[in-house]
Image 1: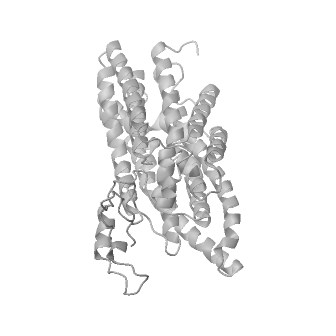
Image 2: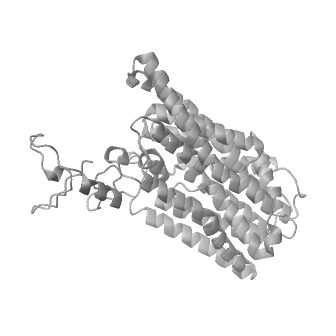
Image 3: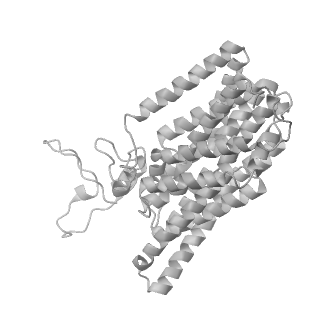
Length: 435
């Protein structure tokens, strides 16, 4: 500790800030379905997740070693490169949180490291084989595997429930809520074993570049403890915007589906942590939620929300990399460049936070979309017109336009029950569409 310079201390603090944003950005992975189905109250859920994230941070260091000694070459990497990488990752995390999009904090970090390294030393600083085998392939495989597992598990749970209770799903719903709590705890534990280690790896890499640790060293105990505490605090804060998207904006989940989704995601994450694959827990959990949505008879996935998520996933690596590359260009100019990057990071973070206060989302209204079918953006996804003053989506409007009117005598309804009626003279809002 006595050899840590001021710059290295700034990098360590910045890494812990990223870990904090990772915590509240990814709380939805473990607790969104549990909160949306009512298995746990929001504050209780995030508190439980925070504790188990902290415990999980102590269970393994395989992922940390992948980042600190595998993703990029330690030789020739300056401490400023790590700082620039973290700036790119933090700003992307905050931006996607503002939009309520469950993008990957892991890929934001990887993109930042790759972009800053390319700007600093070129392609020789990046281990392309590790990027492909332990980042890109898991990124493609994890959501697919978790989704298929959740789809099959959902169908199995409903089939078992019907056989045991003569098709009355309400009898087993209470039991599955208890199962959801257990599976959510497992996801939180798995998240700690995977995501907390990424910050451990970054801090260890910074210590190596600063000459404090020898190349190939494991994270010191104080690094493990500080990273675990930071991600736990962030988790307890709760990324309510993303929880709303995952819990009510992507699909409508029943307890059986929530249990299947969380169990499938936890299995994939724990297996990858054991193998040292630094996959995205966000993508695994999102894939599992979509699989569970399709696994229930009559269940649907809101593909407009899913498409926004896919776009965010695809942009995460290059976007974080570009921001990190720009930050590295500035830090390479000397002390004044480092100061400018630090100021830009603080200003950008503050601006995003102030923008989030215009339409705050917290534990009191995180499930507001469940009753109206609204996604995190407020645009209706169940055929409604969304919040007052916001139009229906393009797909919803098109479906409503081609829906035939109800048969004559059906309760005296007319076409206004199918297509939203315009506001009347008294300014009353249009009625919701029924599709």
